[in-house]
Length: 388
Image 1: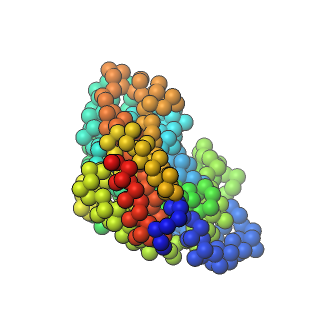
Image 2: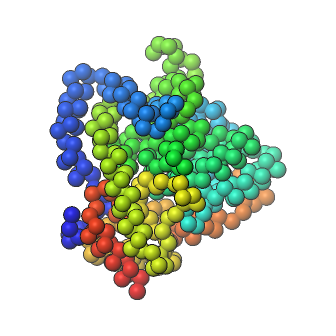
Image 3: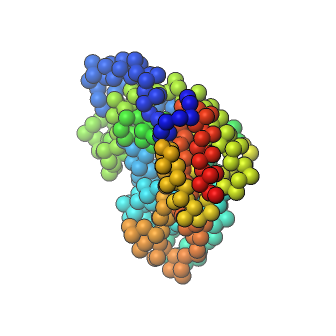
């Protein structure tokens, strides 16, 4: 592609043109068999996603990434009196689920360079909660923000020592890996979102749960279907309506053959961005480990302050280049979570300074597998010029 003309943040249409014939065929097959709920395409998709993530992984398709988080926590019995630790700099879904279940979200600061949960701050807040004794430390939700794996070895070490459930929110990171192991095989469970702009997205809402624990997988299947047992009218537990539509599974099956190539393209584009911005003073997202493979769900940079970020966004928009400002208010500053944050640690929660700074400084640039080199060059030139 050339560098002229508008540049979108995402490009779903180019991808759709490549697979339109297979999309039409698969959707027609669903219309023909009429099994719109839990049809054969759902089972096929689950098997293929599990195989993609590694040996021994089970996959359960669900209705959204948010419902994946909720089903995983319901399966653990998380509720009133439980503390669920999660990053302050992420999307609202990660925090709303504990509150819906009656648990208390405890916000943890993030690292300035990775934008992901800071394990040392997690340890500090777990210790504070445990010392106060009002809440039980029950779970950690690690978010692989913008496609970069969180520090799972450190998170898992803390969870094992503290007896907590480790839930991987990989909504933006399907296809990412750490130390040769793909996400989906790290946490006790992994929640995926198939929102249309994700690395693997459907044409509506959809999600999945991944786990190496066969008993958890069976429990997830029950919970996603109203707590069913062996038959439709055997209700073993309180569940929810959280099933993945067969039509959305058909869309995802049509997209799967492109995934490996698209991940490689995202990696190449991300490397080009990194190279062009090196030495500029613009912060690029980077993991702690050389073994971290970023799925590049978004390409997000860190600027000096809010004024520079807003100036850059306006300058790129004037040149027809779309940008995104994700999470401009950290979760603990949101009205919906302010009371939970204020009361979670009675003695007063430590500062979440990095999360607050990133909320004012980060800017997401166009990132999709169909960006051309000339377009990336033009984006970086415009960004550098906007800084002055």
